[in-house]
Length: 187
Image (cartoon, rainbow, N blue to C red; front, top):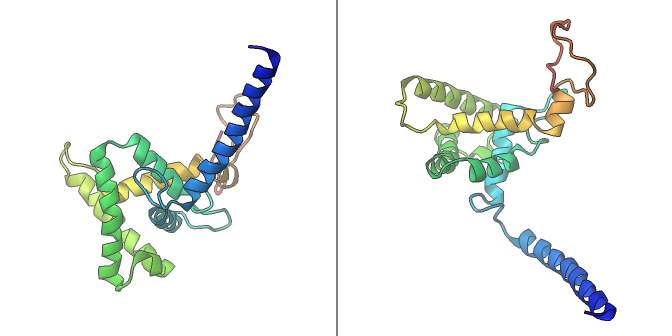
C-alpha cells in the first residue's frame, strides 16, 4: 500500500465514523425504546417513583440523579429474567394500585397521593419479606426502592450534594467527630 492509498483509507474510515455516528444518533433518538427492556415512558415513570421516595429538598432529589435511567440499565444488565418480569409487572401493579386507590394513574396523582401510596406499598413489601419463602421473588417495590437509593447515592449529584464529598481525601482518621445533623461521608 502506498501513501496515497493509506491516506484515502484513513479518510474513508474517519468519514464513515462521523457519518455512522450521526446516523446512529438520529436513529436512536426517534425510537421510544431506552434499551431492550424499557421504553421512555417507563423510565419517566421510574423517575417519578424515585422522586417520591427521595424528593428534592435543600438537596436535589432522585430525578436530578436520573434514577429512572439507572434502574433501566440495572434491571436489564443485572437482574435475571424472573426478576425482570417481577419488576416490569410491578410498574403496572403500582399504576393499577394508584388507579384503584385514587381513581387516577400514578403520573397524574398529587405528591401527597403518591407518598401515601408508596408508604402503603412499603409496608406491604416489608410484610412480604417477613413471610416469603426463600425461592419466592422479592417484592417489586423493594426492588424499586433499593435501586432508587443505590442510584441516587452513587450518582454525582447524590455523592457531592447530599453526602459530604472530599475528592482527594487526606490521611485516614478512624474517629472523626460527628455532630447531629452532619451529612454522611461519600468518600
